[in-house]
Length: 223
Image (tube, helix red, strand yellow):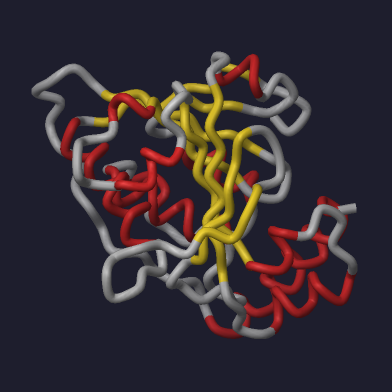
C-alpha cells in the first residue's frame, strides 16, 4: 500500500516540477582520496532510499546521536514526511497531505549488525566509497538535519519502523520540491557524489545516478 501511494506522490511531484522547473543543488567537489576510503551504502526501499554507514567510522563529536545505538555495527539514516513516515500503512489522505502541503519531517535511524545485503536481502544496494572529508560532511549533514532545543538536545519521537530504530524530529520542511529523494540526493552530493547533484524525482532516478559514483552489489526486487 505504501509503495502504491508513493507512486501517486511521484506523479504529483512530476506535475509540480514541470510547472516550476527542476531545482538545482549546489555543487560540492569530491575530495582526493588521500586516506583509506569510507564505505557507505544506498538502500532502495521502493519509495525512498536509506543511507547506511559503519557506526565506528563516524568522527567523534560530529553527530552525537550515533551514540543512541551503542551495540550496532551499522546505522541506516532516512528522512521524510512526519506523518507518512511514521504510519505503517498510510492512506491516500496522508499521502496527499504529504505531497501537496508543507509538513513537518522526521529522521529515521536504524541500528543493526548483519552485513547490509543480509539485513536488506530484497533491496537494491549500491556501495559508494567516500574520502574522509566527504564522509565527515555526510555525518554533519545528518547532524544538521536534527531539530534541537537551545541546549542542543534532539527530540526523539519513539520507535522506528523496524529493528532497533528511532524517529527524530527534523528541522527541515517536507513539501513538493523537498521530498525524501531530494534530501538523500543532497546528502550524497554533500559527501562528494557529484553525479546526484541534479534534482531527482524518484528513488529509481536516485539509484541510477548513484551508480556513477558507486557500484551495485545487490539487485533485489527494487533493482
